[in-house]
Length: 233
Image 1 (cartoon, rainbow, N blue to C red):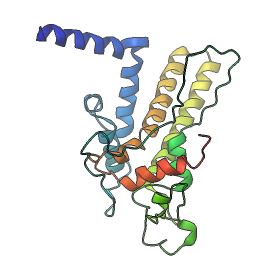
Image 2 (cartoon, rainbow, N blue to C red; image 1 turned 120 degrees about the vertical axis):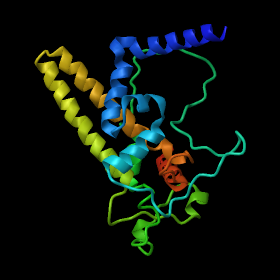
Image 3 (cartoon, one colour; image 1 turned 90 degrees about the vertical axis):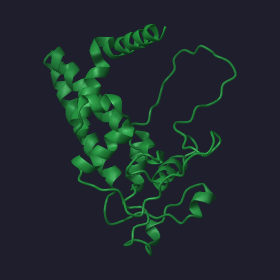
């Protein structure tokens, strides 16, 4: 029974990985190239390992000395950091002529706009600068008196800007391949830009993971609450 279960599980994983011309495998392979890890390691670990390796071995950054590590959860009721807002619904309906709006890299761009990262939160150089203070719509967060550096860009915004630039480069190459009717290159660069996007978007969530080497509850809080200042999001 156990062998049959393991066999079924392996077959399902293989089917998912090879769906749509092995797209998942191709994206994971490109992600391995971005973060300088082996393909096997990327497949068997999560975003926390990828980001730790990217910071340390690509950006040459070490964990901030004053970072605040998230506390261990004692129950499922303990605080977590929410993602995109999902509106409640009473019933399913069918609509026509619907226009969908999407924020491009919402969480990463929030970090860029507010310069949020462990190495620049509550820095020593901007403590007395009133323009460095971060104000949100949550009084509990504001009571903590967070500020962020006005003199240098934080590690996460740096990383996201670099990944966004790389993604834009691949998108240009993809568009050129489409123009030249080069289907192989179109798919290749499409996968590369998708890997950049997925990796950049995963950078916010790891800050709330206490097992992440660069974890910092302040970064998780601030990105979350700066984002939710706009109640329309």
